[in-house]
Image (cartoon, rainbow, N blue to C red; front, top):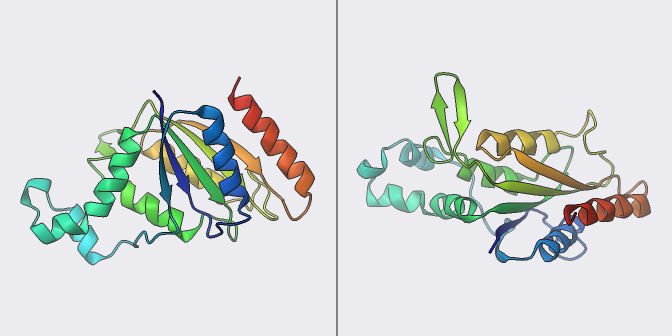
Length: 191
C-alpha cells in the first residue's frame, strides 16, 4: 500500500486553497496517509540544535537527543513515505516560514543527504513529491516566484527528483482560471 505524507503549510485552516488541493490529491491517490500540519510549532534552528546535529549520534547527550527528537520524527515521516503531497501557499513571493523551518529540520547531512567528492547526494531517492501551489498574484514559475524553484531544488537536494506541481496561481487575478488549471492538473495525476 502506498504511504503518503501530506504536509500543509498554509496558516489558514478554513478557506485555504493549498489545503483544499492537498485534500483532493490525497483522496485521488489513496493509500495510508500521515498528516503533518506545519501550523503547529516547528521550531527554527538554534545553537543547541546545530550543536546536537553536528555531534555524532553515538556521542549525543540525553539533552541533545531530546533537542533533535522532533527533527528525527520529521525525517522518519519523510523516509517512510512513498509520496509527499506538499501544500505550498506562496507568501510574499516565497515559501511560508513554517515550511522553511520544516525543510531545515529534515535537511540533515548524513541522514537525508551526504557530501561526496562530486558534491551533495540526496539519500531519499525513489520517492515522489506533488506540490500543490496556491498564490494570490504570483504566477508559478515566473521571475518573482521564489517558492517553486526553491522546493524543486531542496527536494532534489535530499534525493526526491520526481516532483510535480499542481498550481492554482494568481487567484486574486482570475480565480476561475486558477481553479480550472489546478483541477486539470489533478485529473492528470490519475492518468
